[in-house]
View 1 (spheres, rainbow, N blue to C red):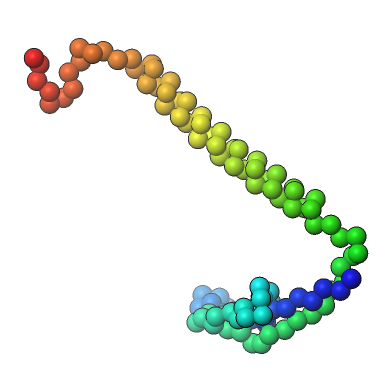
View 2: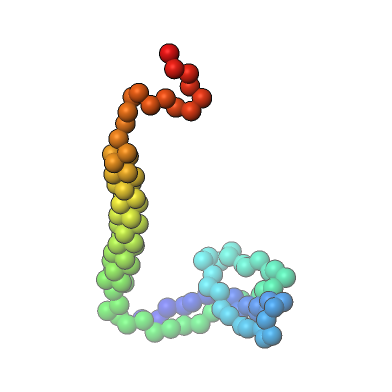
Length: 108
C-alpha cells in the first residue's frame, strides 16, 4: 500500500546557531500552511510516497503509548498522595491542645 505524505520544506536559522537546517513539516490538511517567522521560513509545499505494509496495525503501539501515559499519571498521583499522607501524619504528631492561645488572641 502507498501512503502520500504532504507537507512543507522549511529552512530554520536561529541567531545563536552557526549553521542553518532544513526540515519537513507535515501538513494536517490542505489549508495547513505554516507561518513564517524571523527564524523559520517555508521554501515550498512538498509531498512524497512511502510504502506501508498491508498488515500494518497501529493499535499495539497506540496501546503501549496509552499504558506509558497511564503509568506516568499513576506515578505522579502516588507521589502527590504520599505528600498528603505525610502532611496528615505531621498534623497527627503535633496534636491539638485547646488551651493554647494563638498569638494575638486575648485570654478570656
